[in-house]
Image (cartoon, rainbow over all chains, first blue to last red; front, side, top):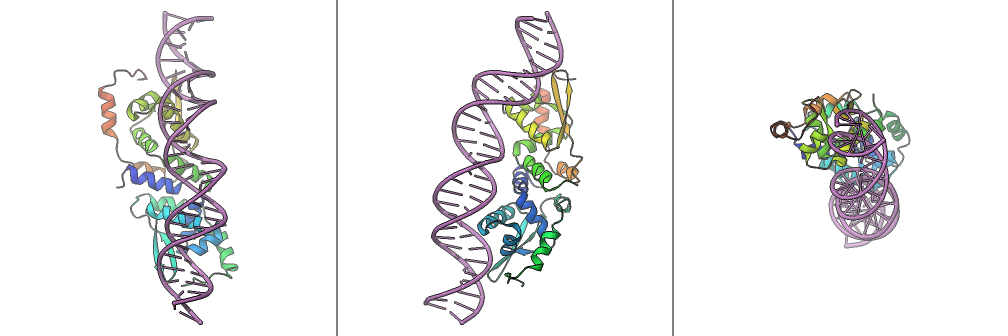
Length: 109
Length: 109
DNA sequence: TTTGTATATAAGCATATGCTTATATCATTG
DNA sequence: CAATGATATAAGCATATGCTTATATACAAA
């Protein structure tokens, strides 16, 4: 079981609306940084920092493929992770928008 | 179900080691501020601010009795609350210490 | 190897957070 | 009502956080 320090890091990572949005997006499957930039309306470095924080908290894992980095949910060290993910509001609307006007996206590996 | 904003407030409240300690203490039952001050080794205003944050996030509720305010766990609006509380490390040691040398405590209502 | 694209890091700034001391509020008691 | 004790709020400060722009790194393709 995670100790107080690990739990604090986890909840700090969760305590940001943008990061909760990101986790909600990842419920539907892995995403690369450039997709998240499109959906979230913040700059690429900002997304990058968010992903780093989520990764350090062991809430997501990354898969590198070519020049892309794909992030996906992974909170296996937390017994409450599934409940937390389930309780996140859906973001299917924003994701559909992405699918419709995905003109500039090339990382469909 | 809580929305993104409510969830963010919840996790921000959880993202602090002192507050996780407090919630862990409250697993054993309600506590007044002066008891928490003793256990936590921080000043009374600091505890008061922590409790306010936990209360605003709807993670604890308060009961006023005379000049004391007793706080207890209450995360009923969060479907994951029980899991989160269960995953908190125990703090029975610190609480026992409190019971042994509780010379100055008078709020045993 | 040069160019372009994806991601990460650094620097700089504004805001949020947490602590302490000092003070205010509120209830109890004499 | 005055005094005491428990709790809350205010002020001031140090540190953390999150954003942007600028720059660096990594991979791909020509």
